[in-house]
Amino acid sequence: MSYQTLTTSIEEALLLITINRPEKLNALNQMVLSELEQVIDDFIVNNALKSAIITGSGEKAFIAGADIAEFTTLDARSGQALSEKGQRLFSKIENSGKPIIAAVNGFALGGGCELALACHFRVASENAKFGQPEVNLGLLPGYGGTQRLTRLIGKGRALELLLTGNMIDAVTAFQYGLVNHVVPQPELLIKAKSLLAVINTKAPLAVAGCIAAANLADANGTAGYKKEAQSFGELIVTEDAKEGIAAFLEKRKAVFKGL
Ligand code: COA
Image (cartoon, rainbow, N blue to C red; front, side, top):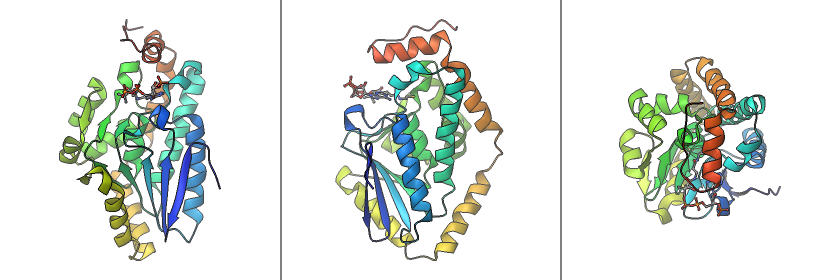
């Protein structure tokens, strides 16, 4: 199967998924979301595959976020629907009984950070940078980031990232427990593959059991996800969000008015 926005390759029982829009720093447009969902659906039911890696093409970005250019056409309803679409896909990744890990090879911002968070764990290259800069656009993360980031690194650190929009480097991400390993970029896929090679020798039902049980330790109901998607729909039509999105696309600084 061939895709427009990503590539896949199989080595033994391991599926490598590479988001492939390097000219836009692998930003997640709606086509990436749809194609990735197709790949994940196939991966989950393909008995020949035991695990997967998600990475980004090039050496600069894992994924620099949702595609901001697509935000200009959203209204409250389609904004909330987009958020729910991303949430559904990322929950499928989190709930896969076969491990899916993120090999973060550069910027993991916005939806890119959220995708990494939905994976079962993360390895990063030394140049990786993580952040949730949606607040700079007058928005909030809409693909589960408010929930998963808070659970993974704790409320204080999560809120600092969410409210400042600041990026953290790979070493800080390691200290926060956001990534498990930091390696030089040429070793990133080697490291990710070597971890999955170990897991691939284990009993698949035991692996699936560990993931399902660990996910339950995290579970806090769906209220937070619902609130996130609803807020995304409400914010996307505000004057400040229009200003924030326009400012990014026009490469200038946003001026917010609280409207
Ligand atoms: N959506 C759409 N396009 C994006 C994008 C995104 N999230 N992130 C980067 N791009 C595009 C840029 O517009 C640019 O396109 P152009 O060459 O057609 O102008 C191209 O990718 C390269 O990005 P550029 O900004 O020139 O690279 P940089 O090295 O100067 O900066 C970043 C890198 C990651 C700091 C910067 O691209 C950025 O801030 N991106 C947005 C991050 C964000 O807010 N994500 C959350 C979205 S909800």
